[in-house]
Image (cartoon, rainbow, N blue to C red; front, top):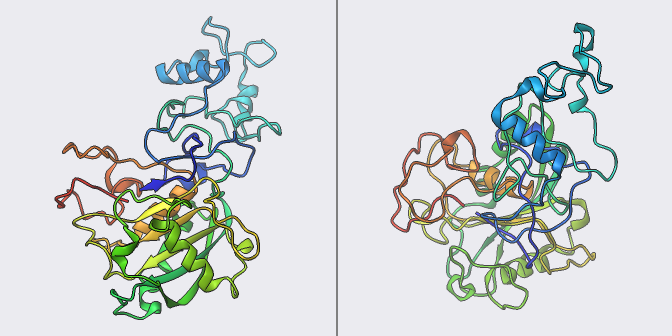
Length: 345
């Protein structure tokens, strides 16, 4: 589940989650910060983008770079010859792979091999705005672990950390074909919160509000205070908080794991860094790849939306285990066994 700070809204993600290479978040992107992972509006497309989307939607490839007469033409208007193949949008070395001019939004994929995209509602075809983490190159995560005075960890910090690492970086490296180099630096100790778990009023949908003494703001404030002297937050792109698995409900009953991404959260660290892109991981998922809940949550920090229904419907989920933004706790889990109507985090 994704929850986003402030009242600002943003566009959703660029690429399908299992094909991380398509996420080009290193270039210039339209501004804005998200409020929630579901139903966020996207920026209105330009007339050129709408025309391209319409062409791709009807599969009319022969007119994509022509003049409507069925003849494929070069940009200067002459009929295209076999020697012009390198200029075709779907060909290796094509113009579609060239970077967009500085300050311009990256164009949608075009050509016979392109899938149709949408720039409305929740879409993985919309550009990713600033504030999210880039999804290529080296990405650095700080990973902390917390428990509570009334719910103390029953395992070592190293064992809890080992439930996710090195599996999480391996997943990102493999699914990105080596383009995403994810590095995690752990604080290998249990950071005990100052109050009992129930006093923070954590539940499904709890916010990160600086105006509240409870919720995720209160947890994050204590984490920052505990590690501020030994951690330079300026060196990290995102923050993971692994909660002792004994806290909260089992994942088969309800999923509390959540990410706050896309913009500053209203909490500054000692070095003046605005905290942003923070994931909280609760309980344990089921299935042979339970670590993927952290891949799912971190992918929200890359700008990817949830791909599951949030209204409690019993319909089959649209993507399933093929994409960690839907069923994120292992491919052998094919149906929801809970009673609350909640799905993945």
